[in-house]
Every structure is written in C-alpha cells, then in structure tokens.
Amino acid sequence: MAVTYEEIISDLKNRIFKPVYFLAGEEPYYIDLITDYIEDKVLPEAEKAFNQIIVYGDDTNIAAIIDTARRFPMMASHQVVIIKEAQSLKKLEDLIIYLEKPLLSTILVFSYKYNTIDKRTKLYKMIESHAVYFESARIRDYLIPAWIERYLMTKGIKTDPSASAMLTEYLGTDLHKIVNELDKLLITLPAGKPVITTSLIEKNIGISKDYNNFELQKSIGEKNILKANMIVHYFTNNQKDNPITLSIASLFGFFSKLLTYHYLTDKSKNNVAAVLKVNPFFVKDYETSAMKYNVSKTVQIISLLRTFDMKSKGYGDPGTEPGDLLKELVFKILHL
Image (tube, rainbow, N blue to C red; front, side, top):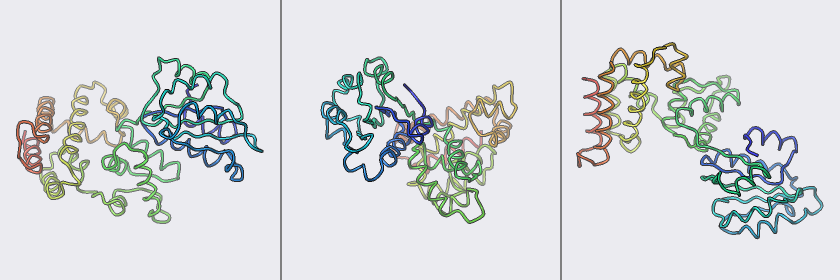
C-alpha cells in the first residue's frame, strides 16, 4: 500500500511494523529519514548485533536477500534487514516470490533512491498489495520556500519570507543540503530571537542579502536602475558564485509569472498567490512590476531572456564575457 512519510513514522513510533518497506523516489531526503529511523530505533542496541543486517545493492542479489529475510530472529521479536542503494539490484522482479509470503518477524527495507518502480509491472502491484510502498517525489522549486518555513516552524523558529526566498535561490531543491544549512543557522541563532533573517543568512552562510538574484529580480521589477546596475557589477566581479545562467533563469521565472499576472481577472492577493504559486507577501512585487512593464514589454523581455540564455551557452554570440552579456541584458530590460 502507498502511504505518506508521516503515516510510516507514526506507525514506527507506535511499534506497528510491516514486513516489507519499499522506499522509492527522486528525492532521497525522506527515504533516508525513514531508513535511518528504522536502523536507529526499531531494535534495542543489545539486539542489533545479531538481528540487524545492512547491505548495499551492489554487494548482494535478490536470492541472498530473500534467504536472509527468511531467517528467524535470535532471542528477539524481529530482525531488521536494510538494503541501501537498492536501485543497483538486478532482477528485482524476483522479489515477487518473497512478497507472496513474507516472514512477519522480519522487517525488510529497500532504500531505492533516485528512481521509481514501473507501476504497470506485476512487481509494483505486489509491492503495493503486500508491502508498504512510499514514493518520494522531488519538490518543485516554487514549493521550497514554504517547505523551509514549515521545517523551521516545527522547531519553533520563524523566518522572513524574503529569507526563505533567498535560501531557495542559493540552495536549490536539494532537501538534504537545505536542512544541513538550516541546522547550521539554528546553532548561530541569537538567544531569545527565534527568527531567521536575511542578515543572519548573510553572516553565517555567506549569501549577500543585497547582491543576489532575488534582489536583482526585485530591483529590475521596480525599475531601480541604480540598484540593478550595482548588483550586475557585483555579479560581474563574482561570477563563480553568481553564474549568468542562474540569473537568467530567475528573471525568466519572474517575468513568466508577471505575464500570467497581467491576464488574471481576479487580482486579489490570495488568488494571485495561489495562481502564481508565491507567498502572498510577494504579490506586491508583481503589482509594482505590472505598472512598470505592460503586457507587450513583458513579452519582449521574455523573448530577450530566451535570446540571452542561448548566448550565455555559446549560441549566436561566442566569446562575449558572461558579465558583459548580463550588463547588456539588464540594460535592455530596464530601457524598454
């Protein structure tokens, strides 16, 4: 049966165990959390030496896994068998034999990362009906700010919307990387001030709160020529940390949403936030930009961004420095 991360962890905490867990998907974060919980918490330390077996997909095969899973635990109620990097296993369909009649005293865990099982196959149908199937999809980039805010909220920490957007831009969608950086921030959080701010991020992670793609996007949206040029100048002198491809992608996302905003009939804050998939805090940025760039200009800018994206990759303009391309692009956008 397919279940959620929360359901699996809740059952494990309540000592409700299933004979087989198949954890799959492109996002490894939740797969690792479940696997680590089972590895660390299911058996007492005294029982692990004889009843907990951890192997890797490259070092084993289905026949050996089934043989191990069919053994009874030694002086314990359960044995735990964890297969890490299970995506490397060959002939996975041979697991069907075990799934038909799994040993109830064995907790067999497959950590099948970066991939999923073909749902048309007999193997998937057997896993779904005879095991716990969990699929961890990669989180879309526009959902990451809200994910960061929820993660911090579980720890009693608030975050400024601009801070979560800033972290998303810098860290991307890798949840392991995001959590690692957030946990570092929590250690440095001043006592009695449970709020993550852009200043705290700048001080402890090294992202500039004034010179980043989020601020470039905002300054261009406001047609703040001085600030936009200052950011471009900073990016030109720090190209390794501020590649032009990311700047173009950030601006493309913003102006694509601005075009959608122009065509909305219901421009209420909540509706705009829902349609554009942004925090309501940022709706005012689109309201401001819509007054600076009408539909025609927005379409022209999107076309410009596509052209300069190709140029930045060496098509149609080989040899031009990325910093010079960015200067030209921003100049053309601001003077439309």
